[in-house]
Image (tube, rainbow, N blue to C red; front, side, top):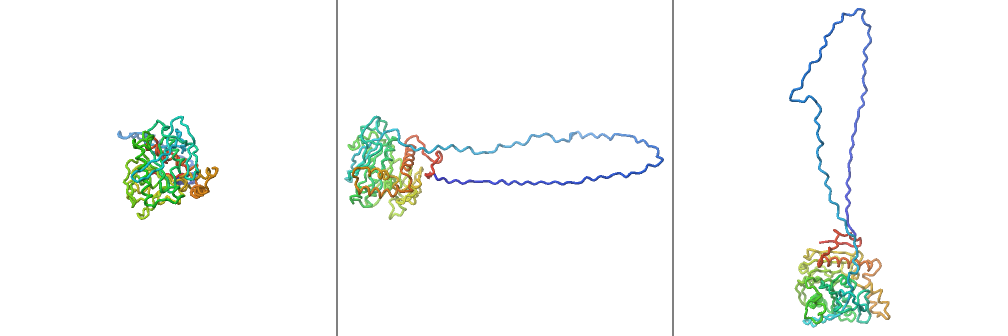
Amino acid sequence: MRRLATLFAGSLLVAACGGSSDGAASTTDDPTTDAPTTEPAATEVPTTDPPVTEAPADEPAATEPPATDPPATDPPVTDPPAPELAPFVPVGDGPYAVGVQTITITDVERDRPLTVDVTFPLIDGATGDPQQYTFVTGDYYESPRAIAATADQISPDGPFPLVVYTHGSGGLRYIHSDYTETLASHGYLVVAADHTGNTAIDQFTDTSDDRPTIAYNRPRDVEVVIDAMLNPESTETVGFVASTNPEQIAVTGHSLGGYATYAVASGMSNEAGTLEPDDRIDALIPLAPALGDGDPATSLLTAEQLANVDVPTLVMVGTDDETTPPSPNVDRAVAETSSEIVYRVDLVAAEHQSFTDVCDYQDFFPMLENPTQAVLDIIDEFALAGCSEGDMATERVKEITNTFAVSFLDSIFRDGEMITPENTEIPDDVIETVK
């Protein structure tokens, strides 16, 4: 972490004064005279001792000062030693193997089916093929650790805290699978939906919705996913409901998904619809959120709406993000929400797409037998804001993002302690502030 420290140096003024005077001794010699020839008769002078004078009874005869002990002095006051800070240790994979199942959750009210990935901790010994996150073109990204699984393979250690992930504009439900898989490996049940009308597929096929519809649908999709994961009568999520803790729910998302993360807790309203704040939400982790400058004509959430947010929040952003710059987006998120606990983590030299898997896609997709050139072009375009020379290395972004997210969730839902400058040596490539 880049840390600001002020070094105070005191100055000690030493004044030394010294003086001496050398005086010459004066010597007087008696003159020599001749004695007279006749001397007067010697007169004997009676010798008498000087009178003895006794000291008054009320005064000591001795004149030496009485012996006294040196004055007592208090010991110097010193501050207690500063507590030793723990080193920053990346969390890595958690104790669970990870499975992924793709299901459909339908919002009957809007006649809106949602394609959803459920990423979850596996039972010991579960096996399966590597999870392939498949694009509409048939191209895919293969997970380096998760397997394709089903709900009957979920660990019996639950119920687990529920984390709903919401992707950025033009993204997909699995655009940040390293993040969602890491959370699942640490004992979290992570659910992510494709926000139809605002996905990479919609951009590719030119079927995107208008802005007000997108801004309403996204937080509403999050609510629908939570409803389904808690509904024991849902045939779509029946295998996961018993493993979901209804009292422990967090929302996390990137960019426009960061907006949706706040909007679920704050409530929102536009011409497409109105949502009230969802009081089931216990914690938020927005990543590079898109909130705007607060102008009601252009911003997605007003200051009044953000003030409704009162749950613990961890917001992370790259210092070099030019898509949703830290100022005003994250500045507003910290200043205008009412949460008593807000952690802000700035990743030095990270950019907007640093919080996705696009850098991994750049490495993986060319290895496919016949990758679609249009997909490669889109990936390269996205990668400019996160995988370029001078950007924070993608592996380092993963370490920081995953470590702070797991630490935060553990501090909210378990007995963990959140990483802060008070207890941990924050790295130089991280700036953490605590509200």
